[in-house]
Length: 151
Image (tube, rainbow, N blue to C red; front, side):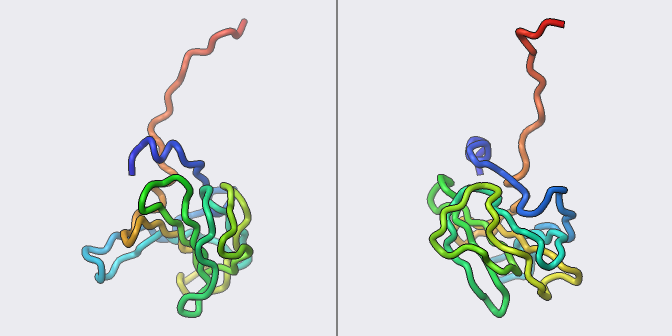
């Protein structure tokens, strides 16, 4: 993912404020069928609001293996485009809904993904899983001179 692509996205945590605790980080599998953790688990009680982390279109909202899943395909992120996934959730939007960053899209559903209640947040490009925390990372802060201020 290029830096210019990251800067073009409006990036938000899908939970909070405050910023949620990361219970388990992204652990890429060594191969496509190997064990790994293809996303991050964020601490959240059942019923917590889930918000779109970036602008896009809801491309799936429904059950997968008995667990509610929501997928948002992110606008302007290349070919194939980036997709974020959220589970276990109770989707509040239908497939085809266009969302903006911060829009309420789901509520955390009770589930068995984590030992304690959580939201599993994933990021994909095509079939490749990526670290969703990369959506939140930006370069170092830079102080710029202040002009036009009298003191």
